[in-house]
Length: 191
Image (cartoon, rainbow, N blue to C red; front, side, top):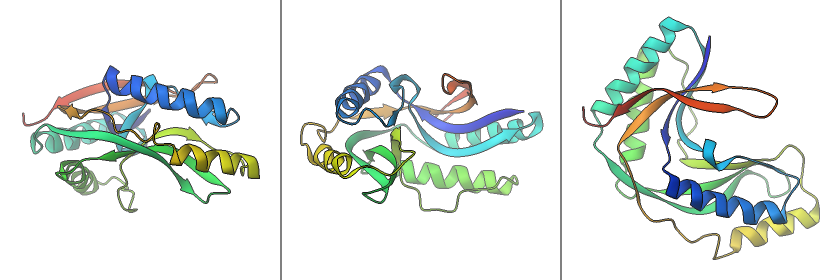
């Protein structure tokens, strides 16, 4: 069984941008579980534990979606969070893609996965990159610090545009030191 997801990987420039943001936020909120920037990716579909047959089907769905997509650009915008201000679950970096190709790619991929019998997340697609996970409610001081960080114009400076040329079927290996992600198969767009 392989813990599998389909995602867009980031280049080193975006990882450096995220690393800087995480460093600054983590210095102000050290008790949160900040992610390693080298492992950050934009997840389009999390599929869980798959056997070899299911993995082949997921890879075929990713190939179909990749063939129907042309390269496109997006940029990182500003940090935000999911959950309430007192008890956020995830702190994330927003993504801006003005042409809607990312949303279309997500829709095409999920339609093909669903036709192949995969369980699909029905929540509205909210493209983001996870920066930290929050396990406990924030103290009042931490809440104020988070709000200050989210309003900081320096941390909200958009990244340069990044052109995406393909997607990847990824595996996640969990260990005590954290998850390790690697591409099982990469598929260029439009081929």
